[in-house]
Length: 165
Image 1 (tube, rainbow, N blue to C red):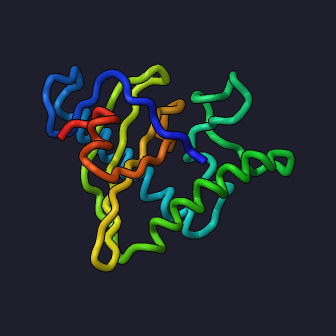
Image 2: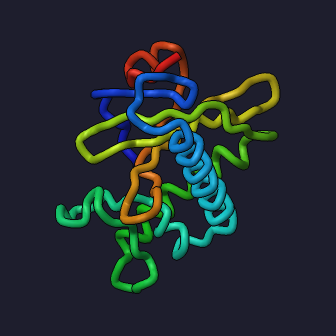
């Protein structure tokens, strides 16, 4: 299961100010992360664990790889990694299958020990209700990879994670 991000340093929203990135960098990041998340949604829906692993930050027992690599589920000896990706895809499929539709609601980034986390909050609509989930990505090599999934239940959750309003 993916653990919650620790609430730490700086968070900025796409619409926010005071970040050192150029105005073109924020929309570019939001577009790249959104594209990666959409691709991961499709891979999980198709139960393509082999490819989905390349979209998720490695968080296993190998400290040298943790936060600096993605999962490799192609090799038969990587059963533990396959199980982790299966768990991640199961969570994603539950959100997708349990909703009528979804929309990308808000993008934000924040610095932490591992690097800059960039997240899309996605609103999943169900009959009579909606649920918002933050999918947080970390840059691994040249691509963004999913490192955290957080359910955003209330304004108090935003406050705890120091997410801007």
